[in-house]
Length: 271
Ligand code: HEM
Image 1 (cartoon, rainbow, N blue to C red):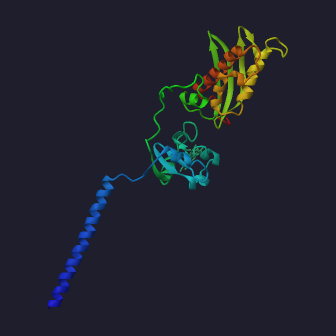
Image 2 (cartoon, rainbow, N blue to C red):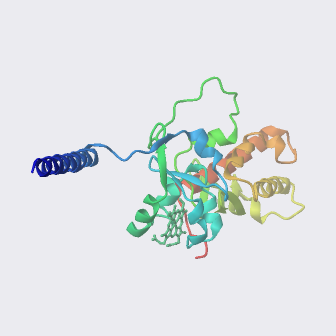
Image 3 (cartoon, protein in one colour):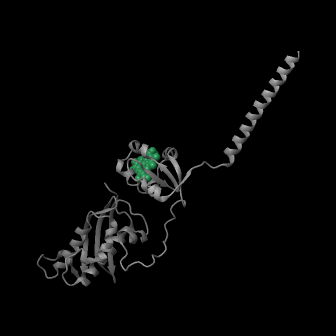
């Protein structure tokens, strides 16, 4: 009888202990779920930048970092579309799989599965005016100048012009492909009532037209920021009347191209 009593007491104590464990675990579990945000590691921009290839492709999207290496072969677009954003803040590409068209909800749920961390310092700041560079040379490099320019320039065909005192002097069309300039052409070149596109090859002013064409040839195939090389025309065109004249002309081309960029895509690729 005594033995039975001991066994019974032990059973009750054991069951109580198990019940306490189950309840406390449940409570703790509930509390943890309710209050703790999902834990993701902070990832620096330097670390992000190291994973910039097909073999290891990380992307920051809206302040979170994703390792999408394994997903690359499954993505419906050509691989290059995804690879262009590896190691970078890819929010812009994510929100514009095609210009102005965001990914679907299904794509967002898929993306969530590749989360590996949070970008240190949070999402990239909203586009605005960055602080003025201090102590830069008179000709800051082109990349910096492009950073200072407003906007992100999508692939497409652009048209822009340079006007002064009511007269259009330069009208241009160009394509952007993967951030590179192609198919540059002048639709209009005039000054003081002279149509430079209509000049005969041997006309006294035809070297000016040639300089403009040298500028277009120089830019063809180059990343966009090379438009700022034109601030130093001696690198780009043949001297015909001292570089002062050329400087004025190349500055007009920079203006016309930037006017086109500001206006936005005139025609989407393939249309
Ligand atoms: C950030 C750079 C990216 C770019 C530029 C990009 C671009 C594109 C393009 C061009 C398409 C096909 C066109 C279309 O559906 O209309 C597409 C579709 C798709 N992409 Fe991406 N993509 C990117 C990143 C990603 C990532 C990281 C994922 C998922 C992990 C993803 C998932 C999908 C899915 C599921 C589709 C099918 C259509 C949809 O659900 O929206 N993409 N994307």
